[in-house]
Structures are given as structure tokens and as C-alpha cells.
Length: 209
Image 1 (cartoon, rainbow, N blue to C red):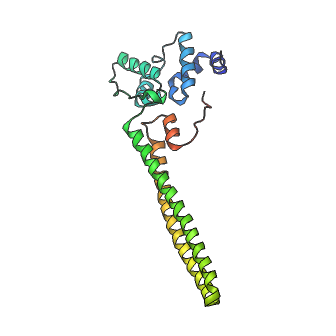
Image 2: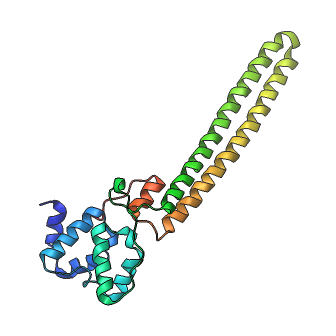
Image 3: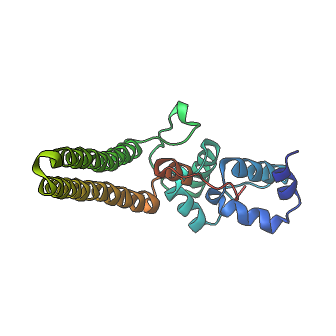
């Protein structure tokens, strides 16, 4: 018996039923443990929810595992409610829903990352070009004197500054795109927490298990 199973096995019926009404807040392992404990005590997960909670769960169906989706759909049919459209799940994604929308956001994140990388490259190229010009000015100082040296350094600095500003501007566009995507993904009701974490490139906390 795992630690999570021991924890939920020791909880009172009211606590277990309350968890069943908020099952989407838990990780896949947490959902599995809670469902197993509900079955062990003879509770029907869907019947543990009120109508409002069942309908709310239906609106967040993509956040549930396949077993949770089946239970909620059964509860909706029993209550005479309309079922939402089927959730498409990709077999290589651990049972998580994969839609054209999630792929669209993933592609957009890649574009944002490419823009940020390009902006950083522009700044690096600018630094290299500026250094080359400065070295050229230093070399020409033997023929042109101090004016050649100062002119080379000033020209190198100006070129480097132009490239740096351009790089900052390009990078900022990528960061703005990424921030917009973060907001859109984080507030979308179409994705589970696992999908959001995956698309945003962050590690999802397993504290809810």
C-alpha cells in the first residue's frame, strides 16, 4: 500500500466525498487513489457530486483521466443531461487529451523561442562586428594616428549599439509573444493542469497527490 493510499484510507467519509467533488484538482495518481477508496467504501463517484458539481466537471472533462471521463459521462446520462463532445486522447501522451488547439499553442511557443534565440544571436553578431571594427581602428592608428583609433572605436561602438538595440527589440517581441501565450494557456478551460505545465515548460507540482 502506497503512502497516498494510507492517507486517503484514514480520511473520513465526508473528506473523501469532498475530494470526489473536486477530483480535477488532483494529479492522475491522486485521482486513481481517491477513486479506489470510493469503490472500497461502496460510494458511486458520480452520485457523490451534486448536479451543479457534475455539470462543472463536464465543462472540465479534459482535466480528468479516461476513467474519470467515463464516470462523469455515466453520471450525466443518469441525470438526463447532455454529454459534451468526445475528448481525443493521443496514445503516446499517457492518456492526456491532445487537440489541434494544444498543437497550435505548442507551435506558437516554438516560434516565440525561435524569435528570442534570433534576438540573442543578433546581439552576439553585433558584439563580434563591433570588436572587429575596433581592432581595425587600432591597426589603422599606425597610419592615421589617434584620429584613426578614435574613429574606429566610435564606429565600432555605434555599430555594436545598433545591433544590440535591434537584438533587444527582437528578443522583446519573442518574450511578449511568450507572455501572451502563457496568459492564454493558463486561463484556458480547455487544458488540464498537466497540459498547461507541459506547454509552458514548467514542472507541475505533485503536492495534490
